[in-house]
Amino acid sequence: MRQTRLPPRIVALRALPCAWMAAAGLAPVAVRAEPVSAVVEMFTSQGCTACPAAEPVMRDLAHKPGIVALTLPVTYWDYLGWHDTLGLRAHNERQRAYARARGARQVMTPQAIVDGTAAAIGSNRPAVERLLREAGQTTPLPVPVRAEVQGNRIVVEVGASEPAVPVPAKAGKLDGKDEVWLVPLLKRRETEVEGGENDGRVATYVNVVRGLERLGTWTGQAARFEVPLSAAAVAQADSWVVLVQHAREGRPGRILGAAKGPGL
Image (cartoon, rainbow, N blue to C red; front, top):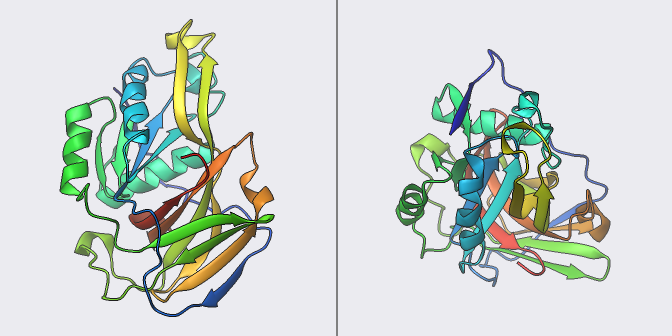
């Protein structure tokens, strides 16, 4: 496990520009969708010697019903001799924002974040599974989300929060700052590491995040969003997920709902 201390200031997560979006109110009823019970984000690096042990954890989670498992390679270990071929600085910023929200002074790899609030060492399978149980692994996330491809568009429907979505105090109130995100990803990628501490190893990732595109704001009422299918076809991405996430002071918070894209 590697750690790095947070800088004095943190850059808030920024949304990528959305090519086109339409939102319209729908009847305040639950949206029928395959239930998602938890979202696990794994922050990792090809240059971290402790990170390969987290890869089988993610592969297993990705095959569990109701779990959205996302791999987010970071770049802050690139100075060790190998530049992560999948790393994005936006992932660094997202992980640091999570740390600041929890009052943590350091970030580490591998690190698992469950539902945007709880953290564990990513290679510690019992710890990750404990967080999933505490999050209610068999209980769907409180906000129903349905997403599907219709022609050349991705259509997202987010259900209304009725009854009111219970949100822990640490996650903040539902105050109109909840956001809907499209997350393009690579379903699987094997990369041979040719330098640094993992020289000669092959990193085998599932559901590698290749971007974050903000579709709009969710206010608690049923809403519909549309975006061109091309918005998900970035950096060799071959699928996507949708997240509904609380935002607090520009930082990502509790994940309230999610939907899987094709082949996940």
